[in-house]
Length: 149
Image 1 (cartoon, rainbow, N blue to C red):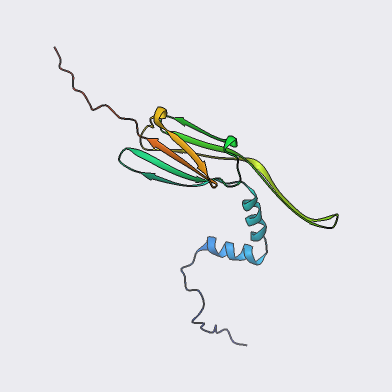
Image 2 (cartoon, rainbow, N blue to C red; image 1 turned 90 degrees about the horizontal axis):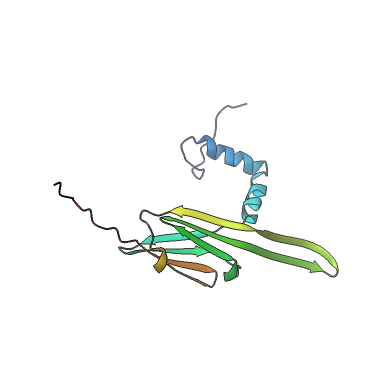
């Protein structure tokens, strides 16, 4: 019996990472796929936020939602996007249901921006599953120095 390990040039070469090793172990124990399915079942809002000199632009993916079910609130520099998500998929074979996947729930995303938003000039548009927000920055008055009398 030999205690030598053969060199495999195609194996993964990395530093020791205990969390990565745990991921591999969970994958081998077939626990990870169940977690991934549970994560996929939760409704999520994915978004991009870009900044120009005078405004922020937010593009949020909220597919399969009616625009009446989307709510956006702005409080100074905090923006909150929420939506009622209803997704149903049914596959039937004759009268017997073979598989049923349903996802109901409320998806919510909240974040802060560097500057306050001019709430009166903010705009929202929803098309093709993407919510686009134009959030103009609030004009900050220049610092004023008072003369002491």
